[in-house]
Image (cartoon, rainbow, N blue to C red; front, side, top):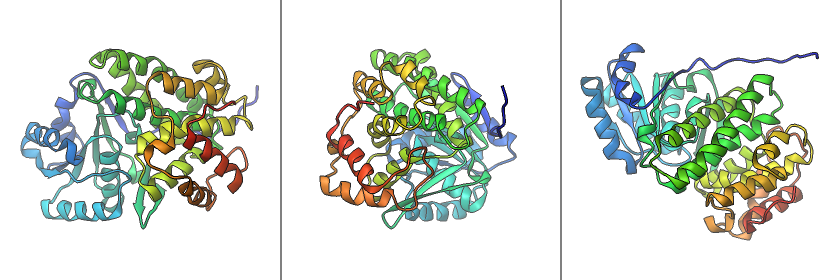
Amino acid sequence: MSLSFHYAGSPAHIVFGEGASQEAANWIAKIGCRRALVLSTPQQKSDAEALAAKIGPLAVGVFSGAVMHTPVDVTETAMKVVGESGADCVVSLGGGSTTGLGKAIAYRTDLPQIVIPTTYAGSEVTPILGQTEGGRKTTVKGAKILPEVVIYDATLTTGLPVGLSVTSGLNAMAHAVEALYAEDRNPISTLMAVEGLRAFRSALPEILATPGDLNARAGGLYGAWLCGTVLGTVGMALHHKICHTLGGTFDTPHAETHAIMLPHTAAFNGVAVPELLQPVAEIFGGSVGGGLWDFAKSIGAPLSLRDLGLTEADLDKASQIAVENPYWNPRSIDRPSIRTLLQQAWEGRRPEN
């Protein structure tokens, strides 16, 4: 067999284990920093303050203004706090919203980042920043966006509501599914993507059944690391383009949008590259899109864009934006085909493919 591919492993330092977040102060010191600004969403402000207290004299404050889709104006507000506090690194506690803010700060300042994820989004191990301005979400990629240290501590995820556990897990799974057919895929990224999907196939039903099970929670974090890592090493395609369009233009919730769209975008591309998506059908049963839809339904995930408040008129606008400056995709796209795909997702129909 003849092989030809490029692979660049992530230089991020991964720390995995129950109670690992207790060592945050040590990791701040290990990367040569002394003034850490702790970041969070408003909902996790008290957790961020508790973390800052544990970090002790190495913490210079808390900024708890992180929100979905990383709006540029929020980043600019955070940048003022960075300057006023004299922070020499950021510690991001939370999910994709907080991680995104930390990345946005690093993109502008090159400050080191330590991320402590409390969801399964996986963005903490990618060198990709998605930010929103003027109703459009755009992405940039670069080495300084990738966090230096990621601390996975399952004990911090037991309080994550089951619904958010499910949607953030499906969000991470979308990274792996796209990695299977990415233009620059390679044998290593494919192995990690398949392993990540298997991890979530096992972990999410267990989390649904027993939310406090630390083994199940650790399995979810393991899946998040794998799925996020493959997204960081290969390119994005149609699925992410549509989700960025919906989130950036209509402010739909990030994880829920990915969860709803995944079966439909996978089914769409499965027509063009069935052999590349065969592992998805094998893991989830049946057809590619149908198997993913059945799995999402079985764990109580949202299935319809209509339930997110989108109207059919919104789909017309979304389909137009989605075909502007399109990402590479294994199947050619046009506005009518994307409009049809969005209609199916809006209605919550089970894909046939």
